[in-house]
Length: 72
Image (tube, rainbow, N blue to C red; front, side, top):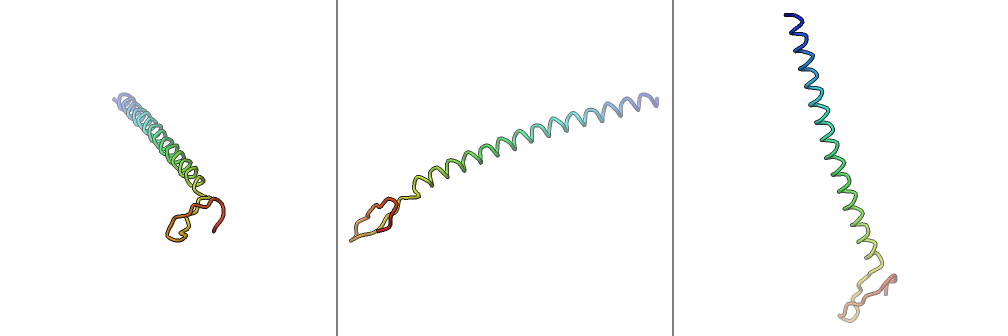
């Protein structure tokens, strides 16, 4: 009877370890996917921001004047 209890306990602990490892792997996979998504979004936003870095709009006589790289 004691041997059967020991075997059942070992099997139960083994099942918990297997489930926990698969849960950790799945959570890590989801976390890496989110990090990759956020990194791509930040990269896209920095590209768009750099395209508009030298673009100024000044008002001159009621008309919008577009100036690249200098302030008029």
